[in-house]
Image (tube, rainbow, N blue to C red):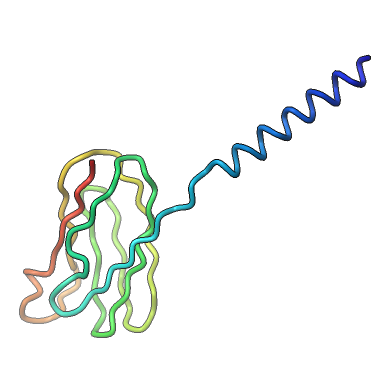
Length: 116
């Protein structure tokens, strides 16, 4: 009888671990293209607590992607995809910007994250 109880408990535990792993949603990937002096898209809707990965690309010159309100940033290297993870922990509208000088017009290179 003890053996049956042990087996039942073990099977229940294994099922909960398997269900927990399969219940996790895959991380949403948001592709962002940087080009002098714009980001596409430049307004990105997000949900508070939802993990996302930005996939950042450029064909121009080295640029940056900085979200100061969330303390994350990355260099964007021409011809290479850069991945940056973020899980927004607060709602609101937040600016992202290029923090590597990329020429005249650099100061207008920004966008917004709208977290609900």
